[in-house]
Length: 74
Ligand SMILES: [Zn+2]
Image (cartoon, rainbow, N blue to C red; front, side):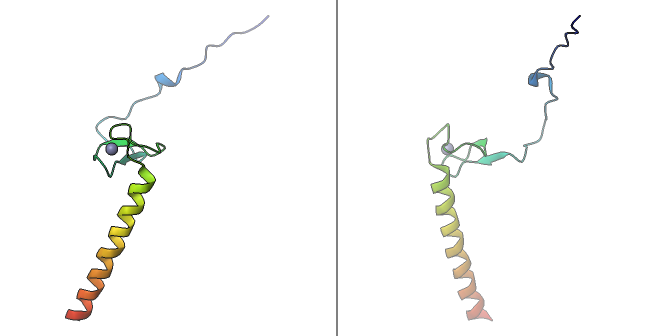
């Protein structure tokens, strides 16, 4: 005797609606949303790690500029 139990398919899991899940990542190249597990943008083909590095560099430059301004006005 064998009791067969059907597996619940993943597609039956509840869907999130009206909310962007945390796993979504915004492409720095085209601004579309992608899964954070992607290495490359599926839309514009940009290398996400590369874009992230460029953004970190730009952010560091902006922070340095702000620090300079703070010194001038401090
Ligand atoms: Zn893109």
